[in-house]
Length: 379
Image 1: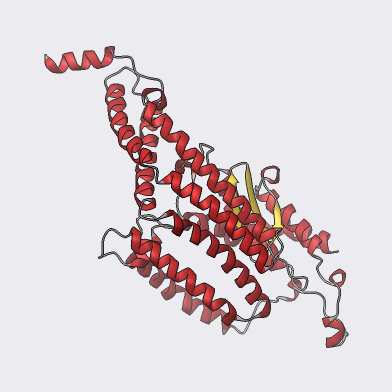
Image 2: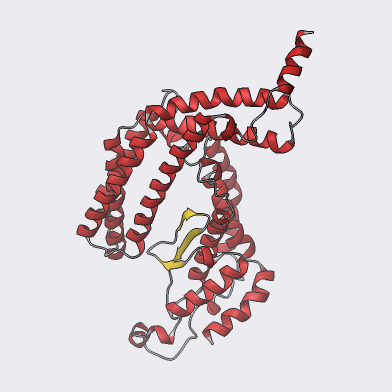
């Protein structure tokens, strides 16, 4: 019969071992996508240096902004290359063909099915990314990179001086630019700009759903916080601070780091505990920043930062454990250098950091172990 003939023909047709072998277009596409990935990671290195090691002056920020703008322009121009669009279409056709050949062969194994699914998902993600990128001119991508550098410098200075008004103009520029990008990328006027921007962090999530979730949290959390704050049996926070002395306020103010909680001791404590939890410092490092964050250049170079207060040791440690949760997630991702091996969403990312910080780092079993470590460090 015709069906039997078709099946026999498919079974007799040699099937390539991998989709890359079957589709030259897919192979070229991966090469181009990986080039973009490495350009973006190079930008991330400059951004990390900007926040951790670079001199914090307006002139330094301006020059770094120009450097990042050049990289952003190159990366964006490569991401909107018309050939990528053509390769995406041809790869989708080739995948359908390869899938049909596998289904008609004697080797339609779980591994082959997983390979089909992975290629299909990558093409889905990259097609969406390509369409969004082509809505944005390279000049806007460059302006965005420059603004991020100058706005960060303005924020650091404003924070140090407790002067929000000096940062307000930069913040407005950031909002205006975000709305400009979202407007260009929006394909449906019925979608709010917020939902459009939200898609960058929670793909497919609508603002209406976020409102529902936040309402549930608010309903449960506000009464709980009120109950805790009004408790007649508040927790004893004295272990978090230096022992009380008979010193005057002026003497307390002039205390040296050695008389409280030295930063280097806190860094040692943080490293000891976060590596015990699973963070791999052979493929990362811990630095000090104005505000804690995590940066990944690949699963083999994931860096975390924290900030420390010489008058109180707990927040610096919790910040490190929180960022360690982000980092352990990144260190566990694959190394394909494609969008398949990137974080699923910001929500998932925060679930990992908050799991380690709140459920582990603030749990009694953890402190049965960690308590002695803290005492040894600050003894």
